[in-house]
Image (cartoon, rainbow, N blue to C red):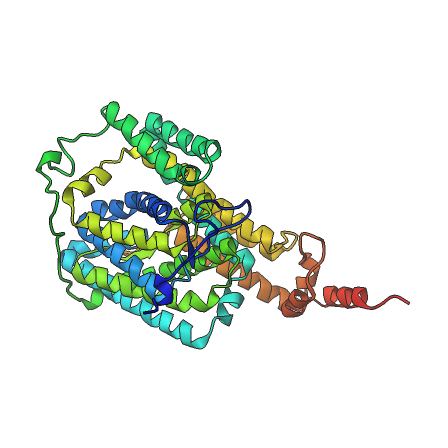
Length: 464
């Protein structure tokens, strides 16, 4: 019986070695032992942030972990194994959850999560049926690169705070990651982040940074090896709709940014999967909210893992999803993960978040985005500072942070300046050009830059 595409992979080379400059694509895999190791690294990369959301909101962590694993596997199925991604807890839900809980409790907050998930699924369905041309128009490379970069740079203060809280563990973790990445070849080099986290964890344990007598208010020995997560049912209130709907905009930006980033890193055009990605995240969020879990989103931390390993195999994400589900049914193992010293998260975060920022700039470079254009320059400048400074806007009970505002700024600034430039006829005077000093003819025509069009046409005429 032939397996569906989402569950079928070809072996990359000999399954052991990745040639210089090569990558393991979504439809490929390394040997299963290596794939399992990389999948475990994905679990560690997402665990801290995924479990932090329920820690802040009071949601059951085991349930959140369970539905992150289920959501990841649904994502892989709906995207037909083309888009490698882990769906972890979305920080965008924290403020709406806390605001809703004050009046309607956990059940009311879960209802808001379900509503957001349903809306996101419907938007994904529309995108999938209407085509993806709007993505290219709405999010050209300068905007896409800016959004990806600002997501990583916005997380930098979190890495900094974690680093400062446990500097010894952070330095050990960061040092082992860097040394392992260049000291070893093959699988050990690919698992540098996992090696760093394990080393930092051991150092933290030896230094007494882990209180096994009080892990979540319970002694480590009292946690059972096997047990069911807590499940809760949602209630629905009209007042929560306006609180949770703005989160959908953030999820759209994160999902589209993830698809664009993976496409850039793998060299594959994945725009046709954008609608499916939105549908999958919407379905995963809906299921999570229906039973007591946090809303989900594609995870930037795991992009960093892919960038460091050059392994984009969806097989590794199946391993990660299944592992998360198994851990959700083991309170004791979950307690061990929860006990990761904060300094370890800081050391790993410096690498992972930094990689996300650099990937954004790579999108600019690979697409020859010119910052001689005022529209391009202002788009990146304004959005990045908003995200790095983590400027916030709090209308009523809502709060939009640096990622949401930076994303909105990138879209508004680029399209606003471009529209004004076309209207005033000044767009061609804004030096809309590539890094080589000339604008592609197709781009000049699309932007309506007559001077560049005339110059390009004249240049292409044969000389007599």
